[in-house]
Image (tube, rainbow, N blue to C red; front, side, top):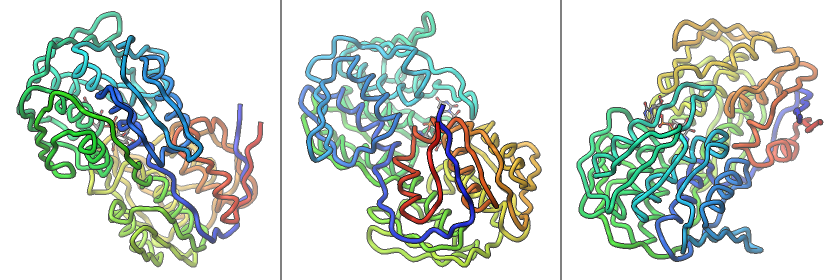
Length: 417
Ligand code: UD1
């Protein structure tokens, strides 16, 4: 098993090129199931979750090719297997995203029920309810969601909770439904807008993506298109926190500043100097930071996927701050590990109270999920001595070449077997 070995204490400085967004690329790849014509995608990141999704789409029958410009072309002309097997869904919950498009285009889909995952139970009831409202018959058989509908019908769907992949699944399904669908209480994440833009390029009729109400006028078929995946705002935010914590200066290029307003605001509150241009953000800091309160909530509020990284920041800031997680019930697993490095954190229910300490000390810690891993890397970058992070396969699910990018910025970090 691979680990990361970090010698903390270096200031990180320089430019880092941000990769395409994992959470935008995943639904956009599944959009290939909606059309018989090729979908050509640029800026798809090289990540474990992406190869898992490509393997799933390949299993279903999508032809996937990669050209010398790193563009991925997907052709879903024929889809002999309309199922997502357990083996694939259990490693990547986003596999549920094949449900809506497959059902809408072929009238049938069979997707393994995702189990619980480390950060919470994460049900998919709202995906199912939405498809049922559009006329699908859905049975849970042998651990699989089996959905059938001759042709989905447009419906007015008010979602009980804001769900990102739920909104994406229903938006894709509604694109090929008969009539108009209105999704109320829809997720407003930038990745929803990126998916909508790709679907619109494929001929879908979608209004309101990025707002709480999305209207989709179904069309009989979608055609081929080209699309470039948006920059990863969570990768961007993670590097910006690294600049603040190490007292360095990092410019994230090929980024999208308007997707990171709340994160940039928190970094400025912490005392970092934050500037941005059309497609870059720069953070400069002397490493003297104030603790900042954080409360996660759906976009445009502070993202849950940046919560762990700000926990790391608060560990070495001066003062006390509270971090409240409102999206997932069990997303504080990094607390135990940060304590091993000397952090002072008290958890009560969904809130963690972090008291900054003068320094963290390197130790061996274990990554428990994707963003928790990122938080341990950040802590390791400022801890005195050596930090070893085990189980970094979580990190490889969502950060492209992270140790290479950090090394270029001046970190002492290496992958060890
Ligand atoms: C997506 C992101 C993930 C991010 C999360 C919240 C992808 C691939 N993943 O995950 O990185 O952390 O949004 O921003 O885009 N819920 C239900 N029933 C449902 C669906 C969701 O109760 O049918 C609950 C979940 O348990 C959770 C909350 O709604 O408490 C939000 O989850 P959701 O937005 O669906 O997260 P994902 O789309 O899985």
